[in-house]
Image 1 (spheres, chains in turn cyan, green):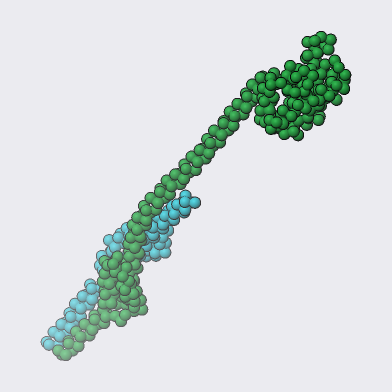
Image 2 (cartoon, each protein chain N blue to C red):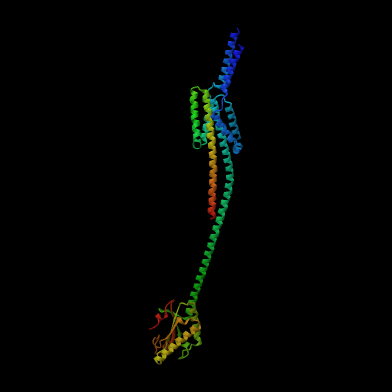
Length: 126
Length: 293
């Protein structure tokens, strides 16, 4: 009696533990929201001229998004979610970098105009 | 049997734990190093605290990751977030710089306007100076022309008063016989007015020279007439020299009865022939070239 009970008990513990393990690490649903937020991050980066200012980061983000979409088709949801998340962060970096470079460009333009004005002043004083 | 169950459970738990416990991967170490280094940067601390905090959170998750794959994934995200924080910090710095530069630019624009105004003032000053000097030149020129006209007018007046005649040789004025003592060379006081005017004229025109020619009628000997005409011409010359005219400008010569201007048969004609003619030459003309043969 005891032996049988023990067997049942141990196998049930095992199955419960395994279930917990699986549910803890694997997604059951397709990560559609992750993919769409990666897409919108890429769009924001493009809107901020990432094509010019951060072409590599943008390219990596786009490639990862494509990979995530393929994994989604293959129902490898967990993997797809991870890659989509990376794509989003890549795109975010591309956006930040682009905005920074654009800002620096504006600063440089103001500096250039100041120097042009100074040269004009020198010319006027001559 | 209880022992067996315990062992089995422990094994399962150990399996779960070992599945979740992961030694740090090189990717994690790299992300951590990048984070630690960036955290030291005061500008990132000040300008991107939230992004830095996000990176830190992700890094902690990565350190607690249960698999190598998850750890590397989270380390990657952490690394990207550190990079994002750095970009944000750089942008905030650039924005601060833009504000500073805008203020500088406003100052420089003011300076440029001031310089333009100064320049314009300078140009106006230069132009007004130029205008003033041009006006002065015009005034001086007008005065010069006026003086010239006045001189010409006076000359014409003087010439009219002297009754000078324009001829090919120059202006000719005649001192008649009545201005000399009879048969003598001395000038009578009546001649002095004409001599004075002539002297004034010659002083006004220092480049004009004169020929003084004495003439007589045909009565008396030729030698006497020649001598008398020479003496009369000489006395006119002397009178001019006394009035300050340079002797080198004057040639005086007697021609006797050689060049009558009227008939010697009548008394009136003879009186006309007794005369001294003064030829005022044009400017720069050499007197010897204009002498009678």
